[in-house]
Image (cartoon, rainbow, N blue to C red; front, top):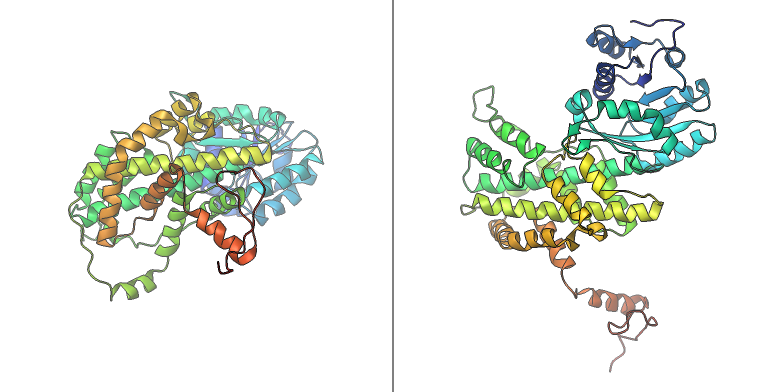
Length: 470
């Protein structure tokens, strides 16, 4: 421990010395700021102080942490989202003074953030809901940061956040997202898009493997993709994964990984909020379903025993690349539509081009594609990415290959939920007429829910006794 009693010299206090808290504390320290830290688990606290070479100021309790901080105090919470945040706040808030700032850097539910902000504001305290992306490596060396809160709260923590954020040719990967829960909402949608990206790449891998490519050849394909429009962190690490040998000498390690993907809940939140906001996010929902279905391993194995063999003719890797890029455009169109709609619902002035910019570095979904999105927003696509002529041209050019890939997968009996969901989304969004006229007629027939005439969409609601014989 390196606690220095009686001194109030630290510029940031960090509560929670798990992987992310420790990494962020070390990052801030390396940028020239004095940092005080505390953790309920003394072993984690001592480990963090030791990792810093004694430069982090370890504190024995919350009171000591608060006493070590310069005014206005700035405290960063890096603890498990949910009830633990409220429990820590209950102990921390009475120790603070008007004008102090509390930052929640966990993956908190945005409505919890809005509530906590109101509660602390009533006590004269500032609260920032901070989305942090990039995992351990990003937190340690430069994450993408999505802070939400009042302008005054952001101004108080901006020097710290700007010092540690990732840097790209487009600038620092941090921006003041908006008020109250905007930061955590944006991080939630980021994670939903992350789900979609990962599922799409998994489907592309599955199809190419089924058509005969082994891990080294898959690595070559993904490395080639990483030099084109699919260039991204996730494609890059996928190529590296395919090159990892099984330490037990049984071939390639990826082939021995259990096909059961876990989740922490942010993807589920994204889909639930999208439903509440009336926004279709089928690609993200398909990615979520993919993880849920993967968890039913024993049941799948039992059912597969009676299933017919599934064979796939050799696929062209270029076709798969086109399908993945088209599906990526569709998924991001959905995610940004959710952001645009939520901004209207909650009164947030979200700058969608800025969000694409700060995601260009540090975060898990960082990709060259984000520059494409920034260009679309610069051209005025804030009403929807599918309205951008350049993106529409890309989709039209790639749609034939996309359809060939999905058709081949369906014929072979191989699941491609995200690829097919994205294609159906595109087809629906570019259809002047959909069959929901029958759905509405059915609703009126069994429940008198009324309907409108297609030639008078702003007219008076109609009801017909559909079931009376003519």
